Image (cartoon, rainbow, N blue to C red; front, side):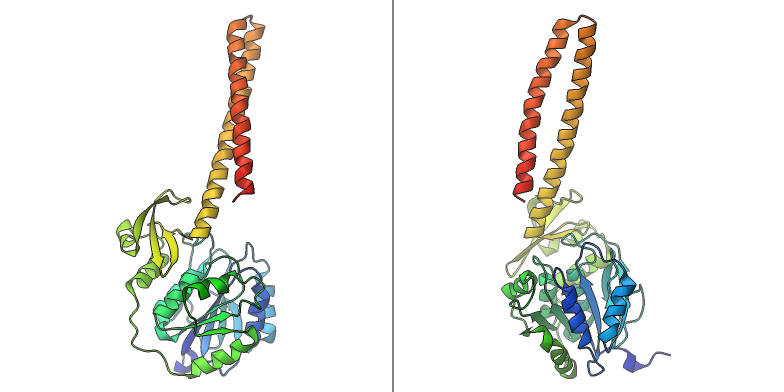
Length: 335
């Protein structure tokens, strides 16, 4: 039977991206029995292979039990849960939830999805840590933790291999700690032994977004209160994007659940535009080949006038193809 002491007093959620794997190893090596918490980790990498080897390496120097998160398992004190590839990691009612909802900022698992769910589930007992990484991933999730009364810890950008993610958090809020990685174990000991910021009500925005991530796809009426309808459409599903401005952090979400910050939306729009150009180029090439084939057949039959008309259309089509190639290459050079 599970005892009360196995339930953690605090939940620590960790987000990292480029350059963050070694930081995670160093952080896990500082975890010990004096830290009354469980830890959930999301790292944004294109591919995480050999998960068992990764967990073994984490376990080698950590005082916590390290494992890949499993759906519906109880969150235990003294355990590190690593998000599996292509699965969102969420927390609800003291249990792990793994989901296959839409990517957020092009990532699944998503740092923001984990952080928001932790903020709602643990409120003042949530602790967010942002380590090395590119772009703005984790900034909104950290804002949710702050708004719910939790503790925010950011790796000192000057020591991070990629300082974008720590700087993104520092640009929108003042964390409880902007610390060297080597000091985070001590900070966790102190924080988990201090009092809890009780009595904080979860803001409706944070609660709504956490529910969207949990249920994957809600009706559009659930998205409207989050912001204003924008002039943009979702590059992944074509739905309306709603603009949310949280203390200068602008993001866009559709009713299906896709979410982008401004940088990610620009990247995704550029990719979609490039894909459209490639499709158009392929169709024009096919049309040119078909016109050439028809022209050659008409020439053999002596239909010279009609064949010449086809050749003129081929010349015009070649001009359009050249222009399209110029546009295509310019989008690749200027993302």
